[in-house]
Image (cartoon, rainbow, N blue to C red; front, side, top):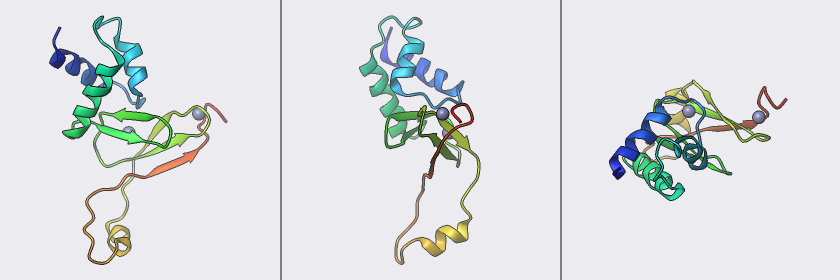
Length: 121
Ligand SMILES: [Zn+2]
Ligand SMILES: [Zn+2]
């Protein structure tokens, strides 16, 4: 069992879920399949994958979630259960352009909507 195999399994798991799991959730789901896996290893691999842009790290103000869908989309965070849901829309380019401070160069953005999800309502 080497690190790259663990990283592959973590990435596979993330690619097959839309649940935006935390490192703890990834660990809980993979530890039976990867007996040598530790929570620290999950953190390290997820951060590495996020660093190179293969996945996104979502800091929602509470926990850190990971998302293998790196397309341009936003997120809705439930204030009660903490789950993160996808919202597929893009900010219009002119909204970005007119609101970017003069002389600044916009590179990317991440919007979080907070509220109560369907399951908690
Ligand atoms: Zn909820
Ligand atoms: Zn997402």
